[in-house]
Length: 559
Image (cartoon, rainbow, N blue to C red; front, side):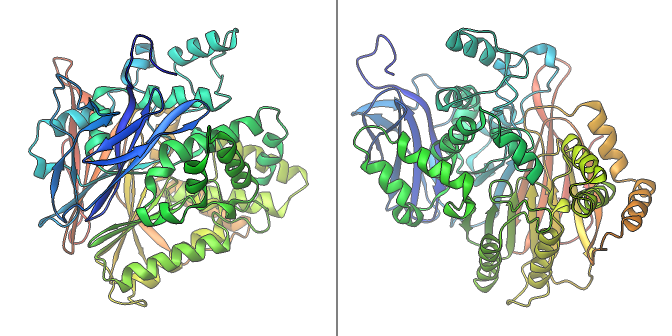
């Protein structure tokens, strides 16, 4: 709906700089009415979804390794950068420059600081604080990519401001555990999360890659077959899953696609060809995606010269049958394995897998999840199976460890890469994850003799908090006595032992945090920053870790 008092189009959200390769870039915007969007002489008409207007502008003809400042015009009028902005001009920086390639990453961002009650006690927003720090640095110190690993919004944990907005819209109070119900209400969540000036500038300048996690639909999304039977019987489910996937496609997935993938996308073509409103097209896509995950591939690949990101959907495409549980179905897993082999064949130095859920967990939690999954399957239909399912849902025991075949298959694929079975082994294989509201680094140590160092790097949250029991639980999870205890439980349940083993390299760290990778030829470093307030109350990021990933052991910084 057009903003009152304006005769010309207004920019509501964005611009977001999304897919960038050496010669092209895509930019996403939301406007208050239909219009023509122009960036660097390239134009695109908006498309409509439930009365909201969006556009994706493809800018081509860029030079590799170049920096190009840009403006956004709507129907010829400049709307970005905003007048009087304190931030540097937004720009497109294409891969191909000499020197290191930097990747910032994190997950779990609960709205913005201005929309959260001070009583919640949430520390400073790491993404906001990071944006302010970057704006004061020279461009050569900016990251080349931003990877957001799930829970960009919280559909089932609403801020007080959103609950008040929903109460006015629905004409009834919204309880503390309320949730959004339709596409219109989802648009409110994205507005709340992406409107603050710091993050808006950051997303306009650093190319972003995104994937969803459970809170973007509902907590524990696709935990198990029992969970799914229960939730799909609820009257609110069809509207929630449809609105959640439609909004994800519009706000996040569309920008994940390369120009070639956009050209091949039947859904994107139908959206562009919709004469009035594309909501029916996208609702059909969402219904199909929920009932047949093979109809939509949410996973994708980013090509960054010597680095390659393979982003893996570890939520929507699960196989939940208790006797054949898999994180990905066979077709999707084969696609991931083929992408890994292709990356090695093309000589990448750093193979990066993005998955919202950690592959390598603290040992005790890993063993607990395997034990629980074994009991759920072995005693399906009986009291022990029922009790095990209640424990699984209550304790969120649904990471890669709880999908044994998928955990082991990913391990075999990584070991094959690290042994050079598909070509020269890359220097590192890095699994980037979030979800668990703390940060840690772990390294695969068995089997030995690998030509590639394989690391799990988990960073969460950007803006949320870990309750005290979670902090205690994850500290215990890395302890030797807890590992012995849970390993004993697993043996009593005759859980199959893994051929893989890993060691904690750093952590756990708590608080709002953001990770950085610095990749330079075959060298790689991992830096972790935690947000805090100094003695004057000013927000800042403090570096707590600087770890070489391709050479020596990690080194703690600070306390």
